[in-house]
Amino acid sequence: MKKVFKKKTITGETGNLEKEEVAEVQVETALQGSDLKQEEKEFESFFSEVLKKLPQKTSTSVLNAYDKSKEQAEKILDKSKNQFDGIFDEFLEGVDEEKRKKCHKTVHAASLTAAIIGCSPIPFSDAFLLVPVQLTMMSRLHKIFGQSWSESLGKSLSRELIVVGLGRGAVGNILKLVPAVGTVAGAAINGAVASTITESLGWVTVKMLNDGEDIFDQAMSFKGQFNTLFKTLQNSSKPSNKK
Figure (cartoon, rainbow, N blue to C red):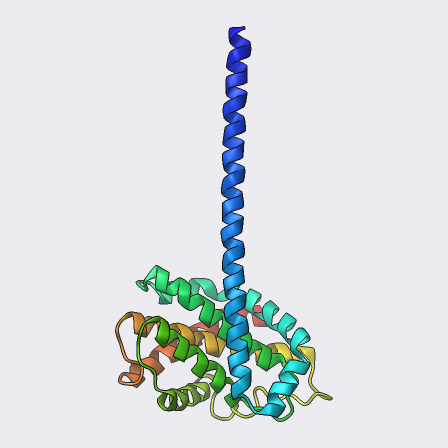
């Protein structure tokens, strides 16, 4: 009887442990689901705001190709996540974890939006279509940190950093896609460039705001950090490009 009782007790404890483990998994899954919903909500809000800032014909082109472009863009971001996460972690060392989580939703929404635009077959488009994406992103990041934001200064800085990221000769051509000529491979490359520039810009903004720096008063530092981070990301992706 003693053995039977002991066995039952152990079984009962094991059962309780299993229930606790299941409960923990359910809670974790629920939290992840909640985060995904918040991320999706942020993206929808962000994307809608950017569309309003784009020329009407461009917005129409982006919307017409939305499903296909978004699918391509999400693949690009999944790939870059594996390549770049370690670099961003190192770059953002010392940034408040809670702030970083809040900012991630905005930076991710901006990167995805930029990649979608980059993957969209927009006739005669150029890299400066990324400016509304980046302005929206930087404005929202400043709001998270409770800092004031200047749209006009931000526009000037954003355009300048796009030139830095792409090279002066590439601006105006890097995102150019004529529907009859554009290929899936070409779209993917453009989407990757667009998202990388945007994500770099976003995390440099986060780091400087976290450190109490003003990106306009210290524009040289901002440009320098962007240039360094962007080049690091470019170099990290070179081996995979050669394969």
